[in-house]
Length: 567
Image (cartoon, rainbow, N blue to C red; front, side, top):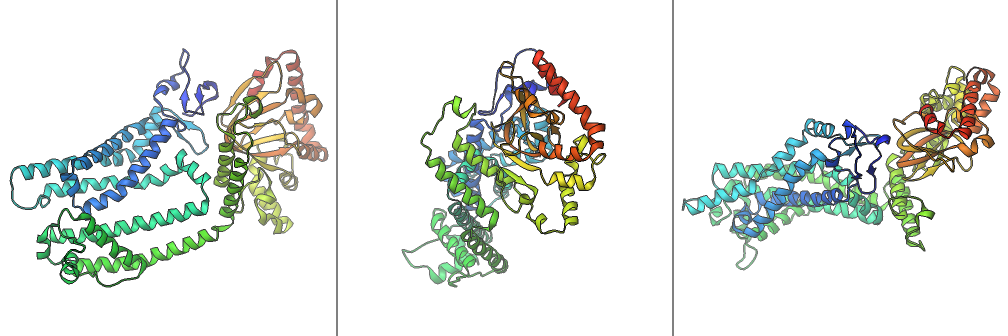
């Protein structure tokens, strides 16, 4: 179920739904419980969840391999904090049943049944449910029972505790979706759009190095912990790399990795070895001892070679602006940021800027980002681009191969226009008119009547959607247009002369970033003048029909409403 024109109670600015008047369409029942993507509270919640997930990406490995659960059991303040973050996972798992989403065409799917079915069938409900288990509380209760009963032995050295520890690992599964959440986060989008892109990418790779180093350090500590079964001084009685380092390198008063309360010194020692391994420095003062330690060290050295080469290569690529498309995006965004800074007036009245729900600065930045997201691999769009500009390869091909490639790109679109279809036009004529067409890009809340250089024409939507109204001063009918993708608009009226059509022409109001294939009227009339059959058998009758309807609008404005259905 997608947001419909006839039910235009949805406010794009805040994700809210206006009061629904009775009778309510069955498809809208329960819509007051739906959380729309642009809801500001939902955006804030997503950002908080991003922070919580990254916290667990660092906490869980540390919990396993460095502290051994010490802080969870003996620091009640930290335990309360962990319980709060765990409860946020529970809330997020439930909220997902009410989160509307955008489909591949940008339409909002808000049916609770569809949302729930998609959530469960994707498997993420069960993953989120496992991630929400209160493992930390179970560990605390089991440890307290162990201590209060006065049982001998280590608190953590029993099967139940190991099972509870294993349950904590399910929280790391949330990392599988962190990239998608960050891509759809409004806060993260604003951050990436406003910050210098080279600095942002450098920060990203630096963060990646820190995260990988942290994980390796925690795994290295986990190996010693599992072999010794403890972090107390009993650890020195077993063979592991920590006991070996302690006997050969420990100095009284220096760093001491032994003891449950020495988790931080132990972490610095593990991290020191991890960074040595990643950067291939290798001082040699920390060395594997057992078979499993040697096995892990060998595997790590192989993987670190690849990882370090990737990081160095990526940083070099950042310095070189990472290719033409990214370089063009960086340049455009920096230019846009400079332009926004130079705005003499930050907020314009609605009579000047039009009825929009976002600042002009945000619309500019988002338009450039949307251009990048839907651009070809060759270059970003320029608002108006011909086929030759979108696909530079066309300009170097032979005439015949160029014609074939042009038809591959546009044939299915031209077939939707009856008098330009292969029924009346030859492949050469279709290719000729296709080369005169352009691709247009529009930002959210933008209006379009005609192209400033090409005049009127037919719009074939490739992405996004719009509302349509009539340019009549006393009667401005607004109508949602659904399922516009690859459907031509204004097919008949475009044939009517400009002077006759001007007072009753269509006005498009775009909702979200929109990309459309534009067939100019000049190109259409040019081919119809040469192809008499296309004019006489098809276009002529459509011209008469459109002219008659437009004439009737002058005497009966209500005809505007009905005519939308035959666009």
